[in-house]
Image (cartoon, rainbow, N blue to C red):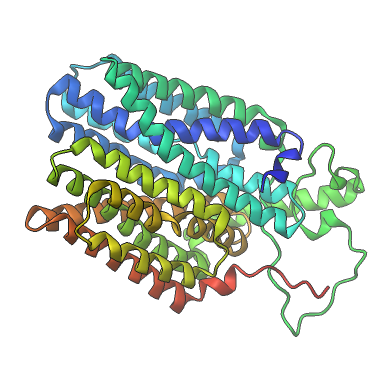
Length: 437
């Protein structure tokens, strides 16, 4: 999996991507801790964090479409400036009216830089081998889990020092600086939209084996790659094809949602988000029920660690992974102590990162030409929307029942994920291209 880091600039891209993910993992908790400290109300804190999440869900598809239309560099630099500036404004105005703070939080969320989505596009552009591309999906999923583990931990440690505003400031500065460096690295500036070729139809007319690489795929050549030496006319033709594809995508109202596979994936990711949100509420409920509210972080850390381990261990079809998640969630209903629950949470999290990797791969294969970044942002938005729905539903049932009711909501989300993946045949889309050529 780590062989992909040998590509030029790959280590720098991965490092800055990780920093952005750490900031992304920390920002929600940093907002909650800062708002609670300055306003003395968890209700206000939840409102601010919720508005940030709403802004993210609404802004993500838009920023993705802007990247497809305008290119990554300008969008990354612009969103980095707005995102960091909005978070710094919240930290600098602790006693501003709550309505103003929530409005700025929406802006900060809507302007979250689409670094992770563009990074996946870069991997597709610079990796020619199918196995390397699949390794990049697992790698990105692992970085996501690291961000979820370490980001909140950093925000909590800074707040424990008595400086909740500092946590918000650090989050803003890290996100802004890391995104800027990422956007200025050569592959981030030169990689064009690209989608791996779909498996050929049995009735398709075979193409000449000697077809120039640049003509076969509209990818702008990267310095030092094989396609960098392609004939200039061929390269220009590929560039024109990419530009025409982007223009066609921008004129279509549906954009990435023209693809049935992307629509299926959006529904699937929403269902999986319900599971994630319900698990978060269950962790808080189990910990609070035994008088150790802070232990919720340990339970969720176990869930994320299990997911991180699963990213390197599980190589299964999406329907099998969803089935494993359904089965692995059930033991959380057992009446055991908190430390045993942490182990069970880790087991339940194991299929999550592999499911994320499948979603990344399906997105790259199914996105219509010129909409790859938008498609990636749609899947992220669906996951966040599902998480919000799962949190609300689980919170409502826990309020009138027990934390185990939240587990049942999580299981229902996993069952829905399984049903959507099976009916939509997501596993067929994630199959590699034909190797018979």
